[in-house]
Amino acid sequence: MRELLNRMHEWMTNYMKSFYTDDEEVQRGILIKETHTGYVTANCVELTKSLRLQKHAVELAEIIGLFHDAGRFRQYSLYKTFNDADSEDHAELSLQVIDELEFFKELSAEDFAIVKFAIQNHNKKTVAPTDSARKFLFAKILRDADKLDIYRVLEPFLAQENVDKMPNFIKAGGNLVANISPDFVENFVTGKQADYRKIRTNGDRKIVRLMWLYDINFAWTMRKIVERGYIDKIVSNLPMDERIAEGVRRLKAHVENKLKEF
Ligand SMILES: [Fe+2]
Image 1: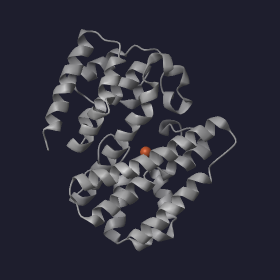
Image 2: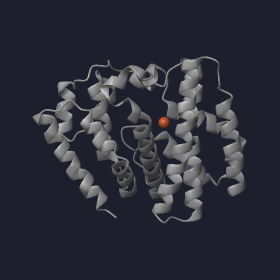
Image 3: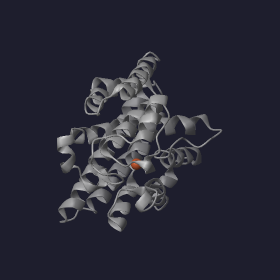
Image 4: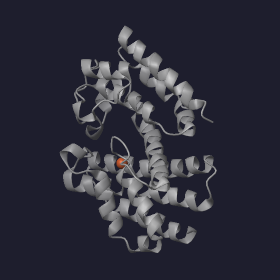
């Protein structure tokens, strides 16, 4: 499969470059997604290796990471936004791109179905029910690999004084004030996932990123998130009160338990 993967990498590199533009704001978005694609692909490989899966599984994870956001480029060129609610579900757009590519026919039917399932489910609230343990496994791998990199992308914009530098496609869906909406505080304290579509403030955006930690599947990913200081950095940039502190305690207990898994 290495030879096929080389062709896939080459195709994806050229595909991403075909969206380069002189428009500075658009170019910034394209480059962020190009870098994100590289990191998510690497995260998929590393995470799959950490699970001691065989070489074929590692290569399949590499394909999944490489193509997971292929639809982002079409989305941005068509709609000038990365906000799915304002345009189209970018995972569905990724599947459209994949379906047009001849070299995917070189995968077995089972592997191709796994690739599509993982990509389709990477940006949904939960993974769709499936009878296939392999489909479920690769969907979980991609979701972790993707989240780990989104923490990296968002890190520079966490401090309130840097919020002005936040590109439009990150701040979409909420204004820039620091406070947290009451329903987001409530969800955080009770450990429920918040509804992205209800994000109103910059504080809400940070709470959503913290709530993601309840949806991290593997201890490997949690360890990376902790080691890189993403949690502490988000928490130290939250407007703190007793309720939020309670939510943070609950969250930290969850993180500790996840780290013990192996
Ligand atoms: Fe995505």
